[in-house]
Length: 408
Ligand code: HEM
Image 1 (cartoon, protein in one colour):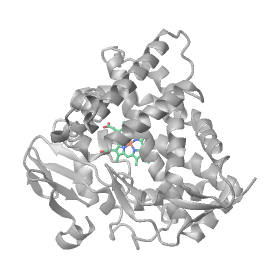
Image 2 (spheres, helix red, strand yellow):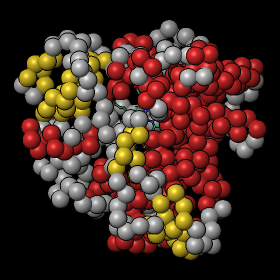
Image 3 (cartoon, helix red, strand yellow):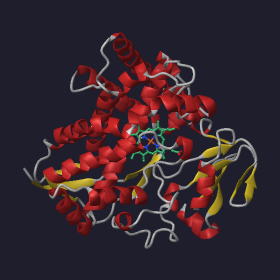
Image 4 (spheres, helix red, strand yellow):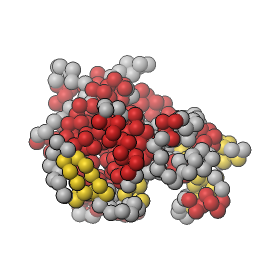
């Protein structure tokens, strides 16, 4: 992506397959135009179509237009600020539980630890599940589902052969059926409960009604949206956390600043650090919209069917917006906010990430807990390389660290 921008400028076409030309966009004004495209002009469900077989045909990721807006309206309230604050305790608890087992002198790969924490957090937030058999069953099955879903053999349509459940695709379908059984069981159990005051996402969704037609969500819709949240919500946040430690531990002045402020009960610098991590290592490096009518961006008109890709990764390194863009410098988010459409790790417009506030709160809770419980150092001096894992970018070694000291 960087080479293309250097060679062709901030708008370029990339051929990602024989009939898959996509237009990369890296200027804030162009990205704003795309994010402001109406549901009649742009869609996303088609592009995410490959998630349909696992996440379901109602998943927020694969629907468009009126139906998308209707489902999104129903799903938004559980992700409002005051609701997220109710989950903060569970976020801290998940981190405390994991960190309690870290030993002085031990070398750790953080990514799986972060993934364990974020999975517990999302299961607590969505279903109100705490430690126990049901949570364990979800954990095992979801981990398997994600693992199977990231292999090439399950993402390429031509390799989708069932072979009685023995091929990678067949295994994915079998695993999806097992997850379904668990999800429907949970939905049925909770529907039968009279008292739904627990404040978890499922309770709120069971009581949610569409403002226009008064319709509640069907079991099928609930199943698809719950699974979408579980899948979209935990690996992304875990990877962002792995990057946060990878970056922060290799920037000693920033680390000293964060820990000094945390000791005084302030998270201002930590919050700026999280923003800087998401700027330099945006876990989801690109997003996309397919246009359905002739659509003009930056003075150029594209025909229906064109895929426009706001490039989060390149925008965040724009030398006209960020001074010394490759440097890790959290202060840039304290001194002033970046101009609109210049910091977009969660996308924008009506498809903006549903869980952005949740993810930021979770990153803060986990980092604050870890940094006040243990002193960590990077396991190697060299920065970890960026590798692609399905649709995300991760640290190649999974963020390897050494536990130097327990801090009580
Ligand atoms: C650091 C963590 C996360 C990152 C970097 C991230 C990033 C993104 C991005 C880039 C998009 C596409 C937005 C667009 O195209 O404009 C997205 C969509 C979405 N995300 Fe996240 N996400 C994160 C965490 C979460 C969490 C915690 C949840 C749920 C609890 C979640 C649920 C969703 C959903 C449901 C969508 C689809 C929204 C729609 O199409 O209307 N994400 N996310």
